[in-house]
Image 1 (spheres, rainbow, N blue to C red):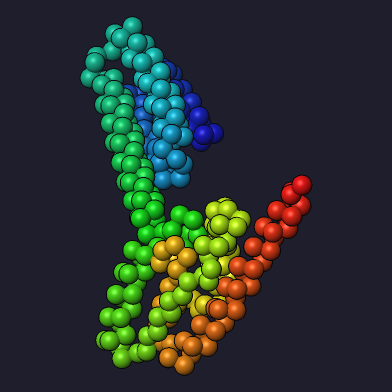
Image 2: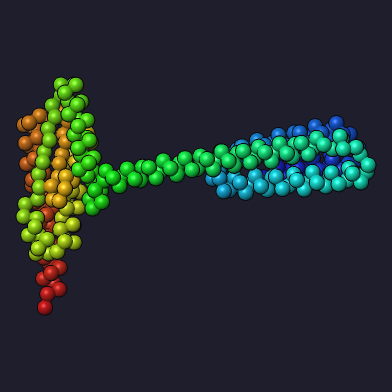
Length: 251
């Protein structure tokens, strides 16, 4: 901004001093307008569209004031229009350039918003809203891809399917909010036991599915045993806390 004010002041002084020749004035104007075009480009590269547009508008108004004043002074002094038309051309070029930069920046913003919206809708379609785990649709697609890769690479593939024992009794005894807590916390507890390449999600209701590429049948059995212990601990911990709340609040 300080640099812009400096160059704008230099242009003004050269335009309004009687010493400056039209050639020098035109050269000064071309240098300053080129600088302002570059500043506009940098502003749209660095700042959000709204801030960059405000800065560009400030530059445009500043140069318009100087160009208008110079135009008025030149007419009063009887100078021919040809000697002052150059600065009007530079002003028009600056205006068109900044307008194009704004249009490109807005187009980029709309494209980014569309990508984010698409990603959000995909997350909603492929993510279980309660547990934030992959839902059945996502699991089916992951399973199809994992089976194809296993067949192509001749690698082992194990799938572990399980549900929560007596889950209906939890809802009946403690309410659906406690049941939702059980589903969420059991999912969180089990997720920590898996490898980074495994896929774990909620198949539906109280049912979960694990896709474990490169896992043999024997290792899958060990994994299932660990998961069984973890899910019972998670279930009992949540239900135990719920029972304590019920005992405390009962008359």
